[in-house]
Amino acid sequence: MLEHHDVTLANGLKLVLVPQPSVHRAVASLYLRTGSRFETPENNGISHFLEHMVFRGTKSVPSAHEQSLAFERLGGTLYAATHVDHGVMSVAVPPSNFERVLPLLGEVTTSPLFTEIEIERGIVREEILEDLDDEGRDVDPDNISRALIYDKHPLGFTITGAIAALAGFDEAALRAHHARHYSGENAVLCVAGRIGDLDRITAIVERSFGAMPRGARVPVVAPPNTQKKPRFRSVENQSSQTDLRLAFRAPSERDPREPAVEMLLRVLDDGMSTRLYERICDRLGLCYDVSGMFECYEDDGVVDVAAGAQHERVAQVTREIFSLFHDLAEHGPREDELQKARDRHLWSIEAMQDDAEGVAGFFGLAALADIARTPMARHEEMMAVTAADVRDAAQTVFRPERLSVVAVGLLSEAEERRLEKAIKAF
Image (cartoon, rainbow, N blue to C red; front, side, top):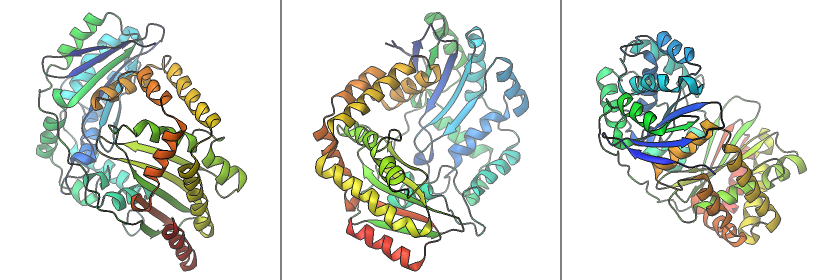
């Protein structure tokens, strides 16, 4: 199984090295504590905008085109993403070019020029508009769901922010946010794949990321939990189907019940043979697709089921999904489906050994969150989960005071009443 080596650089940056001599790529992934949960109503969206701005060039590659060309000439493409509670910048290249790409990644992440702000502002504005209707209302069901769950807490903010806030982001604001979040104490760099001599790579990383300030780990404020009954929001939107979200507050990534909740989701949705797809799609033909997700934060979590259905079927789909929840809370999973979930998790861990980017993602995020540090340690957590643990997790999560439901589409008054009745009866 995979071995990893931890080094802390002079500026506090954590470096995790995971050699995989048999693969044909080398990967460097920088993970940062940044994202919408670290923002305020006034600067919501700045983490995402900053992610865009680091593509706009550095001193040695002073334009977006020259920067992209520099990475692509080395056989890679710079990837970046902003999530609710973290951001990532990553590049994978042929092993022969790894030592050359590290200084470039270091320069891009530590020393962006912040040029052509107005051009990038226009691009991000287009991205925000994708979630809005013709009247400027947010019709993205995931955005609406998180806002309903968390109200005014940052976990309820959108990642892209609002157009009004975007208009106020200037170079000073970007540099201040960059200095606070792109710092050694607030980041983890993972290098994985065929990376060569570890001491040599460590020295190159030290030089390449030495300009990153030490900074401090950015704190968070835990979300309150004042909910006493189910929440429901229906948003009218011209569409052929209604997008449905059934979301529950769930344990955090540090909660000892977290592995059981992960297993609960795998019993519900880990392939087309699991309960959710088999009931809603295969047996009843109510949806083309239905899916479940468990999203963890350091102090909270969300279990979320998503479905798209004909407007007049939304209440029926909701009742059927609720029935699945009740059955798992009452009886738990069968031993055979729990074993299948364990097996599939092990196979995904084994397959990761051929995937340098997946390895960098696992070790980088685990080190950033300070949770299960190896894939096998995570698998052992999952193997320890019993059917009774999954049943107890279902009883903990699937409760009315944890439930928020969002429907985005064209519900008739009668169908909306039926949906509300199903929610109240849960």
